[in-house]
Length: 201
Image (cartoon, rainbow, N blue to C red; front, top):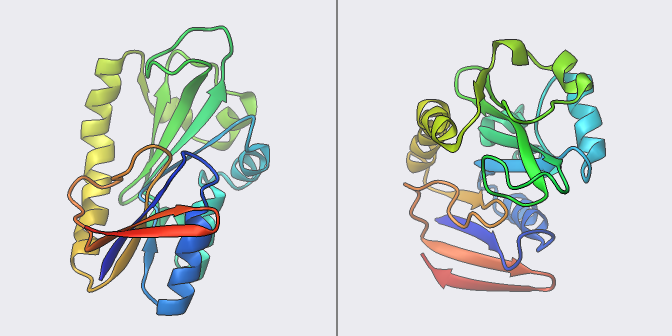
């Protein structure tokens, strides 16, 4: 069985708690195709990222650990975005008030980085990641081109791997209900604190 886990709210719905518990109970492999965290709100994740030179969040780390073995967060989470609060500075490339994305880590055979040319990347991140060799974008059109070139193949590769499995638990990200466009689940679990509603896929 293939299950999509979505949240009733953008944050703190309890998706990862539900996902990791289900992995541990069933032994079915879990995935977090897309994820992201903030320089300000997730400072502990950011500090760990620049110390390790690896960009991933708590959700992917917990799901990878629940999977067991030597699974790395990047294996089950090929796209991770780092956000920066930017109050009073307009909407930026993605049209989001109050925050801009700093850069994406995209993992296929190796890590690739896509950097927002309009954002000021913190010095610690510049030292920790090879952003001087990254692809820089300064418009929505350029970002869309980069996503077609880098993000889409990485997500497609993950989707192909999931397709080959008998079972999978795929966790959504924020307000992106379907983190893989080609993934068709058998069922969808919509999670909120103390309640889960299950629908046909």
